[in-house]
Length: 562
Image 1 (cartoon, helix red, strand yellow):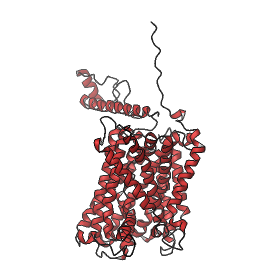
Image 2: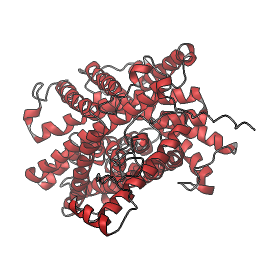
Image 3: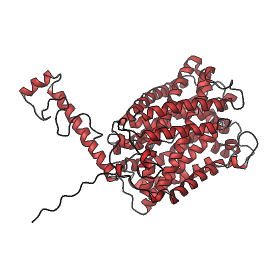
Image 4: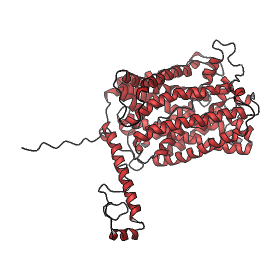
């Protein structure tokens, strides 16, 4: 059994005494001491093992109720699930990758998009917490959409999320380029960085190396991934808090001058500064998503129905508080608030200019670590999603994709497939100067659409009186309906805002082409309609839990003869 910690099902002592755990007495006392420990310690260990076994059996029974047998190894604790969620959000990765974008299009006052996005995403996260408490299963968004909206909605939600994960993997891997060359010019392998496509080509090279590393780590099992990820998150949190303190110590202006500075952007436009602010909000929207990863690892976690909702909220709130302070203090500490480098080199410039090269480079190395574990978490979530869909025979070669390695207890083939697709996405855009904003924008929109395919069916279920939270677990109570409505409105509004055909996002350089400006609608439309057409005409006729992954239902004994 995956939740086993070394003790047998018959209740024997894991230390090997062969005696029942409840046995005690003088004779046993001496024998236990000979084996290296007093009976009290062994009894506590035995009780803990019993508790883990009992909890593991309960978790597996809950999985069996959904029709699946337990195959993945339950090894993750509270911090592991929290780390998975917060590393996907990744405070340092997101803030350092798109700070320049927010300032360029919204000025320092773009900071207000940070709390705006947090409030909207909190509504979504609260809905997800209820779902995570009731359905703690791999491929969370896919299974939630399937349970709430039926198999067709579930497939489309899973397909959008899986495709978005691959694009997100590429988008996050690009962040190496924004950080490493600023630490040392040695990392600019392609050209000297001044050529039109030098940065894009070098970003593809660095990103490819990172994705290959992530693929290897994820393929070797969730325990290795979780260990590396947790260590990286620990470093990231310490670095983020330290950065807040260091920036606070160098503050040169008050928040009022920062939070009202717009650089005059949006003047002369139909929507004025509000239009510029909506464009700049992409920088904040990019950071605060992916919190559902904590639940996507539910089949590999202990007591996920309780731990996953907590991890989702803790990850989102911690990211909001720490990230918001980093952005605010950076704008308050930078020597020149109107420096053009703020909108070109971003937060990396602020750190180096404010803290000096030595401390600044240490912080930037921590950012590199944050980017690395973020890629690990993104790929780990994608692997579980692909595994969940393949287990339902909802993908081509489902049996192969859903195969769990008997050695590593993880789906290895999805790790390789997602890694390869991520690299291909990078290579296709190798000579695209606006690679950063285009890939990032499309990845965010697809995530928001996938979330909508969960929150909308959930709202319909609530309105029909069919939704019941898990008894004794996380519940919104009477606030469930208004929170769900706000989550849907937020998701729809932000999806439209992010996909809007802005030339500055989708066609920033070179000649203007309509198909570039409408690139988000075209790409997402092709992915959604093309994918669903394949599902409808081909795959849906084969769908159903594969026999090798189906829960074994014990047959009832025949009635006794009278």
